[in-house]
Image 1 (cartoon, rainbow, N blue to C red):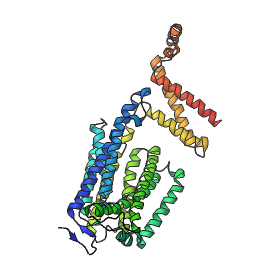
Image 2 (cartoon, rainbow, N blue to C red):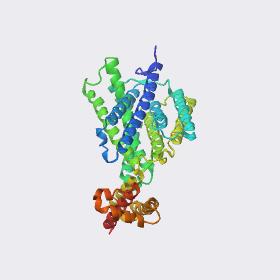
Image 3 (tube, one colour):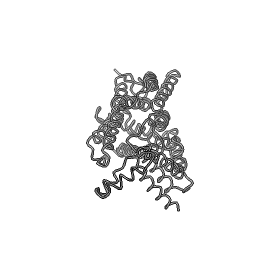
Image 4 (cartoon, rainbow, N blue to C red):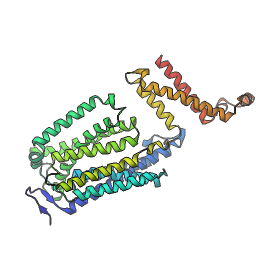
Length: 412
């Protein structure tokens, strides 16, 4: 039998909380697996070269998308059965699963530091669950949620401060976002926290309606509140994902993943602590153990993510393509022109051109005259497409020369 506290809708029920924790762990593992399935589909598709298809036409990619949707839905449900301060940090399990899948399925190298990182993640999650695994589960009605949580002074102050911080970062995101990974990850986290905070009470309303027959979605004027919350959940989830993609566009994942884990976990913990008072009544030892667990899990996420993306490009030529893309993005769309990052990328392209020239020379020999002679002798017999069937390095060099000429025209 569950034991109740002075507030009747807060129930201490170990089975419910452990179900939420278990669901969060499984859901994050599912999400991690889905992302690796999509990555595998992209790798296979890029290996086809000019015969590659749009990724939306890949059945495997859609299978990964379906897995991701199931995992995210599971995470949403988990917030209704366990505290937000527990479910959010458990996201570190996804990084752990991703490292294991990358090693055994995608055949990426397994480093000694990965062992340390995985052990830290496991230890951190255990500490988090140990500290908060039997805390209160709220089941308020709409009226109780409004009265006891939403219109409290601390909730209103926190909302104003949070929205102010979001607006400030949004205003300067183009100025500092490309230089500091924390800009876009913090913006993403500040928006995503409302998805988490909304899920908490939305799932409580669903549980009351489905499990206890107390319908919160169609009774009285307050019935509009759950639907507004659902809209906020969806909008904030999609909006925050956009800024996470921006962070990954301008920075390596070995920076983005641990930074996002830290900022997202921090925002969710602070938001839940202020709005839902999830640390109210907790002992000093429990609070200390909880934050120690978050820190240890964060160290594990950083260790597993560190330098993993530097090991190899996703497909041949990926580094060159990213260099070209960054050059155009930075030089043609932002103030600073040829004095910005695009100019530095242009210099890097010239250096790459020199290196490719060396490769072509090594392939053709120190003396190009035999190769030219051979070319002249077979030219009458072959079509243009066969004459120019050069090595990959030569094709890259030619492409870079064309790009450089185009950029010079633009800069002129």
